[in-house]
Length: 194
Image 1 (cartoon, rainbow, N blue to C red):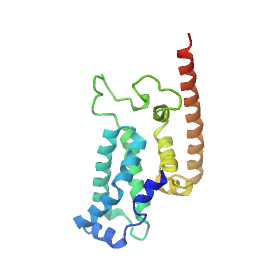
Image 2 (image 1 turned 60 degrees about the vertical axis):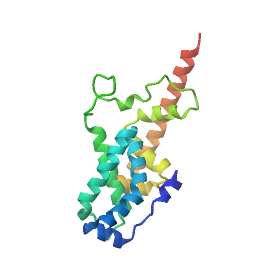
Image 3 (image 1 turned 180 degrees about the vertical axis):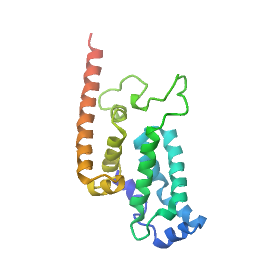
């Protein structure tokens, strides 16, 4: 959880970032190497699709490269980077899907969860499927809180939302997740009864 987040340096040297802003490829490569895994995890937790998360991670890095001149070096780099990532992922979720699902007939429905039969209780797939039913903003704050180990203040900074909104979203997301898991459990119990 937060251990993986800690694997990325919390602060790259200001010199590395300055050199990357000046267009030095090796310095930008350092940014990529330091944050690529964390950016992928953020993207995956929002879009819930490995292929889209890989594409998004690349798009995030391109966006960061193109917009490094907009980064304010007097402020910490990581919140700016994660905000770029989060905003791009949320915008990506709002766009209509360009490709069709394999064997599908239209838009990919990422909210539908697993295409397999409802998983057994306690299965991580149950949680993933329930998470897929949450709004992207709720998934984002839950991922930042429980996957990345971010504080409420940090989540507010990364998402650009007021602290009260972040707390409300996390509360509502957990409540909705509990409700969805209970409903899935009840469906599974009802479906297995003779």
